[in-house]
Image 1 (cartoon, helix red, strand yellow):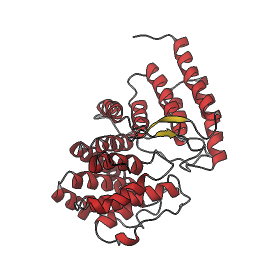
Image 2: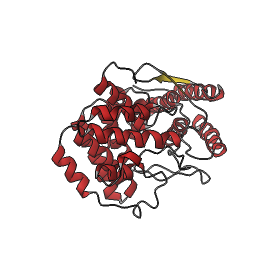
Image 3: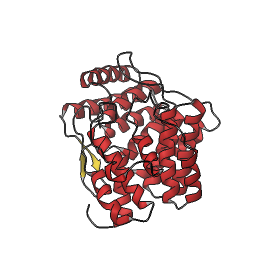
Image 4: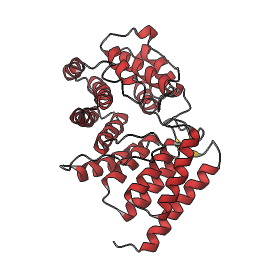
Length: 330
């Protein structure tokens, strides 16, 4: 199907206008529902502390202008990412969808839209976009994200790492442990290929959980035994080392009675909510993997008791609660 240039501009303008309206409505913009039917609202302009708030808002304004002026894969990707950092997942999806109307075979835009569908608990859509993106990237060289403006803290992330990583999360939330382990393994291998300790650690953490929860205990233990990094290896990690600590817990090198933490680290994606949910989720899985569901319950409940509903641990905790405890309310 062929589209006119005016249609591209019109679609982009509508998506951008919707984003601007949402951003101006204040700290509570409805986005979707949790797996329990709870309405999910944004919680301010900078819920995950990706950068100082004034820096983030400046970047959003500039990205919006660039996107409206010239809709390209890169302008849509960057603007959508910034909207996602603000918790505006629906608006980010609208931007990616507009981009995909113009560039229907953009693996990068599909990868980013898949991530935002996951945040909104739309796991089937996330899997669909993720698998399409993976097929388009198959046998292609690794691609890195373009950096934002000089004043904005960003890293040249490998697109395929996060594509596979988010596919793993979507399958894990659907309790398809075999597929989850497969995609987390692919993400971990990308991390190993480019020598990024934090990516290896994150991939290993979630792959271990997927294998162990899928009762592939020999493979899970072999993976855990093969992880030998320490905090020196992770000294350049821009986020907190929650996944490293979780792996140490699974190795029985941390005391579960003192493992929980909820202190804001001051780092990106490592707010009090992020630390609380992550450490609680690790504790819950420490017990679930051992068949001790009663001891996991309070930790799983606490992993959900945060305002920032987009964190992976909170989403996975919702899915786990329904699987393990059924209709019982958290």
